[in-house]
Image (tube, rainbow, N blue to C red; front, side, top):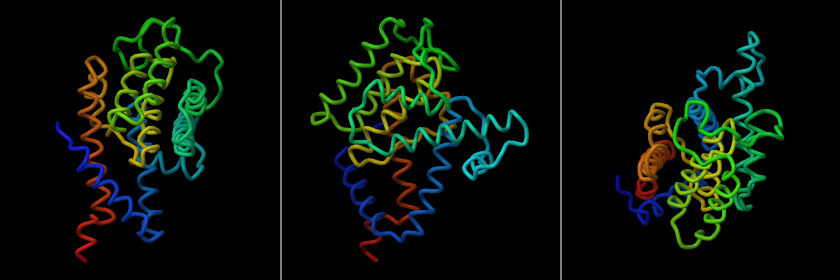
Length: 245
């Protein structure tokens, strides 16, 4: 799938400028819908089956109807807290400590032994990963490369490279893929590109992309970014249509 970054950048810049001029109520409505959508899809990617109503109840602070339901609602809130933290300081350098902070938020509690010590990927992900002894070096190399290439590589490509590298490093026993997506989205936000959401119905393709080179992940990213830009243009109105009006 091809994407002209020049054309895409122009569309994004024009769209975000239009959104800044939109009514506050309209922006709030979009932000609310976007928040709920990202939680729904993020959790489904991680194998956590939630309904839209579950997301709604969690964000309203509702208690679970039973123990399992309470755990589910807490998980939604944990993912929301991690995403909000990612959005707070996109310009700050990405470090292993930042990734560990994301893990703490996603997990709902700090785990001093959070780094993976098993030989393979965990949860529903079954791709090849580095040995536990190589985790720290692999993560540091991936994070350093992002900073090194910040002025020479397009932010979308840098985000995909980081995502794929962290997936291969698989630093934590839990939520490594979710943390890779948070880190990649932080790169996008730093460069004034809206965050990417990989849809739940692409979950199998996402899992399979981990077994190959990064081009399959790139295709998923580009499809998701184009879909989200189209959605924003439908919601707020496309800049060119607004200009004609």
